Image (cartoon, rainbow, N blue to C red; front, side, top):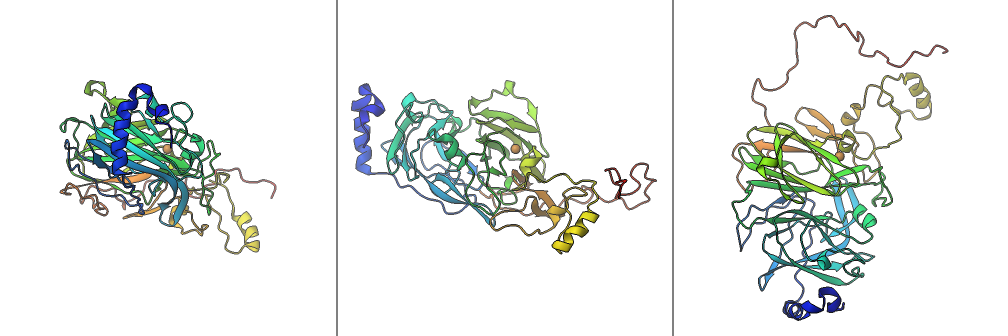
Length: 448
Ligand SMILES: [Cu+2]
């Protein structure tokens, strides 16, 4: 066991010893594990102040127990198998069976005691990003505590002095452990149930991996060239839709633990940032947005009133981030005449099809043969054809009369007659620009 004196400092030993012996008497809290990558229903409070619980896209909330007025949680850092999409599983590191770890929810004013058991093959710690707490609880291995050795359990205990949206992740071999998926959300609800109350509250973390198609383990040394752009270690078309009842007040909390910024864009609405990982934004300090840049190592929460029914896209506006694994070395062939080349290649490989001469849209439509354990670069079918997206993309589905705890997919929106883009079937005026759809934009070769 560790030396309690190192942990709490000499002055606090007596108090801490009291707290510790009570805890020991109860033993470790249960550490539930989640096998599913499906979004789990919100967990309403059973004691203390009321709050609107969050839902974690393709995730879940960690249960707790009460021990003499302290909320106790048990995180287990361990290797996990995460289903990133139907047909693709990644071998990651996470907490309690999944990556990201479960969302921790508590209330401003709570005292929390969080047990962290290390079942990784190397040491770890947990840092509570954005929390106001004693230095010795900050989880920086080597600086504020010894690293948690393999097989050991450490205890973090502190008061939640402010409400807001925080994150947790290791501060111990951080590059590797975060590249392997170790992260989670920590939501502290306001003590006043009426303060900043919403009807639906969604949370997700932006994370990125470099996983070669057909393989299972992320390349942890990658600095910039990631190929799996995820929300909660999940990619489109298998990210849970954000289901909302018309006229709900909705909050979306987005944390960024990737190595680049992500401008998150939501269609159909304008909205305001109401919270960062630093705290709530005063009403007079907010301004309207339709895209919010989420900086690296930061959280932004925005809110809107769901006045407009429909299926509204929500996605990262960096278009390479709405793609799944792809070969980054593919040259651009738009406008290139590959017919002669295709004929030559077909002599060697009869099935060869030239790709990308008119853009890449054909990739969304074709069921291309792909290696095992990967997902197509762009995919997903909507009610009107291929959606041609991947990665950081989902749909906000606003419908009339969805009951409070119902987050099940209502299917595709049926646009009322006269409110959907239609095809012009009358006369077409003379085309003054490209007369021929196959116009080549590369110079014709002169020496063939
Ligand atoms: Cu992005």
